[in-house]
Length: 199
Image (cartoon, rainbow, N blue to C red; front, side, top):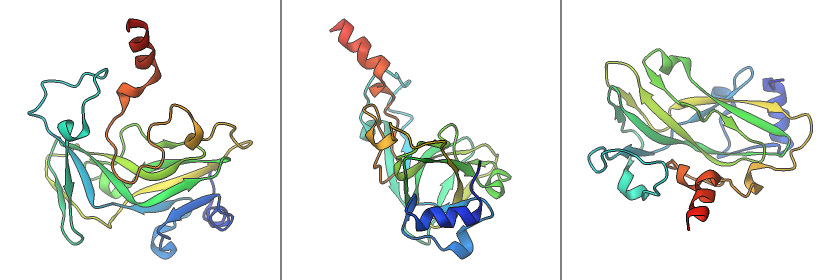
């Protein structure tokens, strides 16, 4: 069951959904979702440094991607075919009995901009700024401005509180992130087990 705007407000008042900084409900609250805004930091792939990405290799963030900070009022230009990471301005924190889903905005999708490829589910107990997987599927560059509404979150109650909220999972890799986080795929447990057996 997806929460309506009435229940989203109730959950916010009950601290089951915490959003920092406090959103402008007049412009950000929808009928069953709440919009989040685009942050100022982008992570751009350094394509020329590596011939490929090996998922088992722990490549340093500084080697694989380059950070670009865009001041307020200026734009980040998404080139056709480009894929970059960004983050929301707002930090989201969820109680142990509520989950969230991130959705791209239709107005951007109609211009060829996808906001997330696969990372749409936010577990109960999530805390941090959401990383956005931005891609330009169109044939024209598109300027994105920090502070613009970039995505929407919907919320769903769980049948009971989770006994394994995300922030407490031993294998969580992204809890508490405050900007666009690059992939930590090499830290997945299946690769750790393989490393231990070959050691």
